[in-house]
Structures are given as structure tokens and as C-alpha cells.
Length: 355
Ligand code: GTR
Image (cartoon, rainbow, N blue to C red; front, side, top):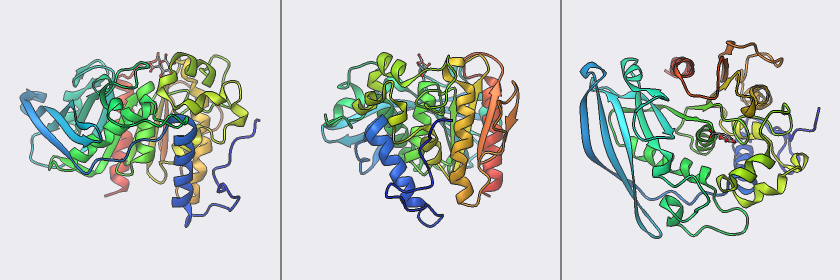
């Protein structure tokens, strides 16, 4: 087996303990910022939400969906982007999914908003392209609102999509319908990478959901099936998702001072749910499962169980529920009902363990 960077030693070689975990976590985040995703700008002092429309006829009249414009100040003036907020209208605070999606709106093939409301969940839903385009233009949307350093560590798109999710959370914290103790970030594929990266940095997120996030998401780079996407492929097709430094590791995975288990571990002791799909070999299901195994050391250190599944490849349909939960769902690269069923179950487990 190849050498995998060690979670449990600080950069200076000191052993990591439960006491200095906070420092180690900061190191993990820092190396991921510097070498992979780029540094985010500082958070604004505050955000303002303007509700522009409300639809009360959803989930049989038991839920509402608001269109909201979120505004905040940046060094280059006010920035605004839209998102939707759907919640049960029973006057209570609800566990909330913070969902970043490919398309606008909660009525979408990747989410069943009525079902989530019926189960007592709220959902904030943002279309990633409303934050910044998915291309090499680093001047539009939120990306254009800051001076991006050109030393190799300037933010890529994933960092800024994640930044926008955190700004939505700033706003949700002002809403009585949101139970801030119970926030789950969710995204599929490139947005699964975004969900994990957002949760790694934002401790208000109690459960990070990664659906088919693959390369630069949940999947190890060093241990990979031959069909799996690599740093070489991803930085060729989507260089702008990352900081420039990430390209240094094309064909040089062994030189990376991190691997993707650092991303999962930076979420400890909070919870993670990783979903893979059996036919999604590009995202490398087994590489995703193995990085869950590798990241587990962080939870063990903190007196938790971490990943409780096997290290042999799971069979199709198998699930394991722990601090890091994992499911290998039958089918293609997709965010569907069996995925959400599992994530809702993981969310309920998290709530049960943290009353
Ligand atoms: C692929 C990309 C993957 C994954 C996917 C997606 O083309 O190579 O890393 O993120 O797109 O976002 O659907």
C-alpha cells in the first residue's frame, strides 16, 4: 500500500491528542486551502435576507417555500444572490438541509421537497451558478467581489460555492424556523466536494453529506481503481474548481502533503455521510469507502466510533451507520430518493445522539 499522510501527527511531528485536535484540525484545513481548494475571503459582518415571494401551497399546505435574495457587503460593494427556503409551517424550529444544487429551485429531480417537509425537515436550496459560473471566469458573481491572490492559493470555484453556503447559514441563523443545532450540508458530485469543504470549515454544520463526490471529494487520490478520476483529469477539465497549487500534483500524488481523508477528518467530531453509486466508477466508490476508513482515526482519537463498516469493498445496497456513515447505492451517478432516504436516516441518527 502507498504511503498515506498521517492524520495523527502534527506538521512538526508532535503526536495528535484529543487535547490538541483543534490545532491539528486547523492544520488540515490550512493545507487543503493552500494546496487544493484555495483560501476563502473573510466572512462579512452580517447578511441581509429579503423575502421576495412565498408559496404556501406545498406539501399539502403544511409547508412554505420562500424566494429569498441574500445580500452582504464585500470589498467591492454589495453582493446579492437568490436562494429558496422551504420549511414546515407548524411554527417550530426544524433540522435543516443546506443544499447546493445544479439547477434553481426545490422542485427538481435531485430533491423531493414535499417528502422532506413531511418528515419535518427544512431545506435551503441554492443553485451554484447563481453564486458564480461553472467555468474559468473568476471575475463573475461572488468571485469578482474580492481581490484574489495570484500566488497559487487564490480561491477556486468550490471554495466560493462553499462560501455562499456559509452565508446562507448566517441568514438561516436569524430565522426561527431553523434549528441551528441540526444543520446538514448536501451536494452531489462537484457539489458533494463543495458540501464537504463547506462543512470542514464551518462548524455550524453538524452533518456533511457527500453524494458521489469522488476525486477531490470523498475519494482517496493515492488509492484508486483504474477507472477513477485523478488529479490529472480533474485539473485538465476543471482547473478553476481549485487553486493553482493543486496542479502541482498531476502525476505526483505521492508528493501531496494530504489526501482526501484529511477533508473528512476536518469535520470530526461532527458527522459525515458518504454516498457512492455502484455504477459510478469515475467517482471510485471503493476509494470513497477507504478514505472513510482512513479518516476514522480522527473520531477514534476523540473517543468516537468513526466509520463502523468494513474495509473490504461493500456490496451493492450495503450501508453502515456511524459518525461516518456510508452507503453503496445501486445505480448511476445521480442524487435520487434512495440517497436522500439514507441521508435523512443519518440526520435522524445525528439528532438522536445530540438531543
Ligand atoms: C465530472 C467530474 C467529476 C464530478 C462530476 C459532476 O465530469 O469529473 O469530478 O464532479 O463531473 O460534478 O457531475
